[in-house]
Image 1 (cartoon, helix red, strand yellow):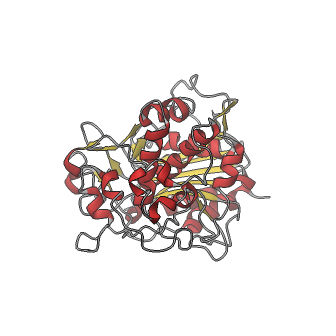
Image 2 (cartoon, rainbow, N blue to C red):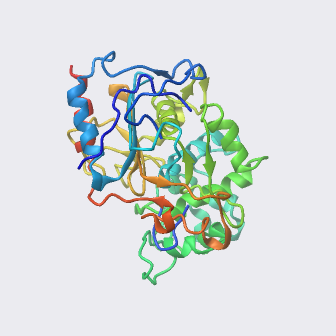
Image 3 (cartoon, rainbow, N blue to C red):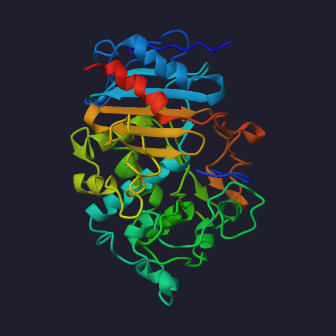
Length: 397
């Protein structure tokens, strides 16, 4: 029997890693409406309805039916059109205040922090070499890697992005999450190919942002994220996981709500503006969502829908960009449609601090729900077009 879900979001209130030991990185209206005071909403973040925005609700429901197939393990969906939440759907016993997690969606947040640091003059440009912040690399060719190459996953550093615990080749993701000082582990990665010549998706690359930010800031990375992103965007609650050495895990692991992930996506759609404030420059977001020379589907830690790329959906708008994480965490931004869509998977947040003591996050925050915590992976492949096309069709002309 299929689960039943509450579709109309107008009265739903605003209450608003990994990391895996053996695997990889990365509540709502229930069946009845709950009225909650929305007075705390940003002026450009309102609750409306699909009907008021001209969406055909029967067609829209096809997206809900796809997302909430039992085997896909969806926890929540939030759809934002023209800056207003027009509908949201949640699994039973989940609501708008329930914790969700990012996995690699956090890479797009980390990229934004790098953009803010550049906007503030803390980093000269994306063409600065990594030897600037990692002097231990100055004596070999790794020191010639540029920040741009980290952002575009073209560093040439040897890495195996796998969740298979039996892969012996190092460095790899499983070994990373088993190391208390994860950044230190990445800094031992050797150079395998010439920087700038090959795209290889690597969480090790993205963790380098943590050390860069530590070097250029006069405050903790967590405080920088709080004052530049989470508080200005009005996040209701958030946590960003750290390793045992205190490094913010800039490749993964932000816990917040589905609605708050949508705030981040809406800020990106609005060219970096939220509530009348420029969070990150339009120039940065333009650069971040421009295809790199090596991989057309990747910008600065954002995925792009481009012909011939790893993400290539001709039936979806070509200006779509997305933040994507393990086990089906997505923030889709479709500027031409003035649309932001968030999908998060089933997640049970572990108790305790968001720290990875001895390389293990809170007794194992492992994909698949090991020990009753973590996210549950879809049992079938998630398809962007199968989910998003009914939403676009519901908009009509």
